[in-house]
Length: 308
View: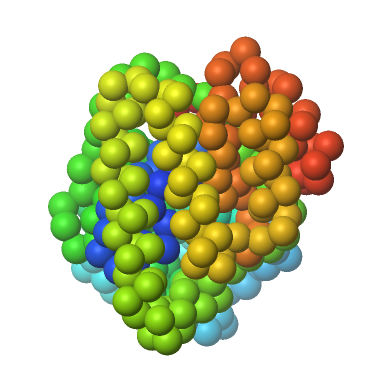
């Protein structure tokens, strides 16, 4: 039996603009995880179990384009394996689905690592990320690649699509409070809507993308230098730009405002938007107060995480 876990992730800066070649920053969130366990079976066939979504099926019965099938077949192809002994893979996750925390990518990474270990071979972080990216295309249509990258490498990442990944140094640990609106928000839909906006208003939209990209570059410098007040101001500015892209929502704006009123250094939506999560940069001792303010403003759950 082999088991592998993968963390969630949160985008700090650069969502949506990253799809168009601008930089983004993301960090792992280890307080939530996806776990995959592979064990040998006595009976015939390969079985996939995902109790969280009520799935128990023989692999050959699932559609060829199913994300779980794509992840497993990607491992077989990469390792050059055409036949194998029967096994069952069980998948579980504490990462909320469609909330901007990378649940799909985390499940893929956990599955890929658990299966390759079960088959007696290991894959590099780069190979794991590439296989998970193939699955991300099923989830999101035209994904940036940031989810699979930060989760596969499990490090803070400065990411530009099509360029080598760059991890970066965190000057001093900082604390985030993540607030979940409880509204399911598939990234594929918001990414598609932003593309329509870009096609209709290219000049205006590209200007917004450039501003978001500049903020991401400045934010990396602030994180490296531990300049948290300045980082918070960048979060506020980034949120305003995402509002201009129409990907925020009344629920997200309400939580962002509540975080700021309760003493957060800055706050913004995170991920695809239209629901999902927002993040607030806080002084560590103020995290409980901000988390409580978010719950009072309607957050369905909060996560306090330390980066660095």
